[in-house]
Image 1 (cartoon, rainbow, N blue to C red):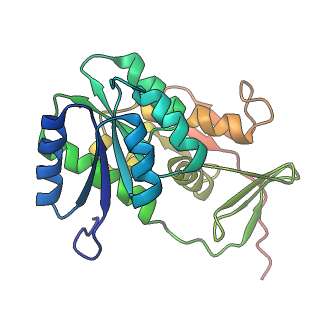
Image 2: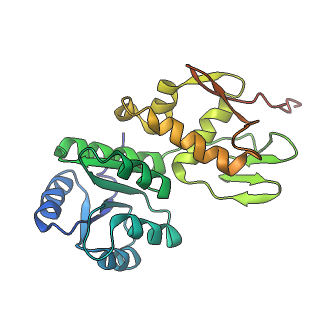
Length: 241
């Protein structure tokens, strides 16, 4: 569980509706978070530079710069976790946000409990990770992974992975040769709160394939087991003492 008492996590809330910002602030502060406010995209980018938040709650519909454009600008300078606030039923907005680099979304109207739960889950994914002591894993001549340094190399070039992509790759590689079901992946990578969000797995598998596969449409590392889940190729391990 994420301990919000050991350090005060700073959350930037971006929404042009001041009542909504106040509602979110109240509930986050009750759970021990520090809240910074912004009411448009320009202010959001200023607060990001000045305050260095641990997470951003970003509304899609804003007057000066919409949330998608703000997200694009954020991703040019920072990998801070971002949760998009979307209108009910706007499925395209949800997918678009994830494709642009959002870590999650919450649909309006939402309950305070749901919002705080999602915030904690995203922070937990970025702040805790099992350390690996294997050193560099050479899957083949093309793909090398160093979990202790959190580095992935493809054709001798360092590949940037977002925290969620990295966690997904970690669990796939640690279970290489074995099939992980959609539910197992959701629980390990996203947490129990996401058991009803199977599309996350498909989206992030696609993101990961685009970054490490030579031909994402014909993957050699992350293999699909239809109707079950996914399996990372069983690479040759160096078991010499």
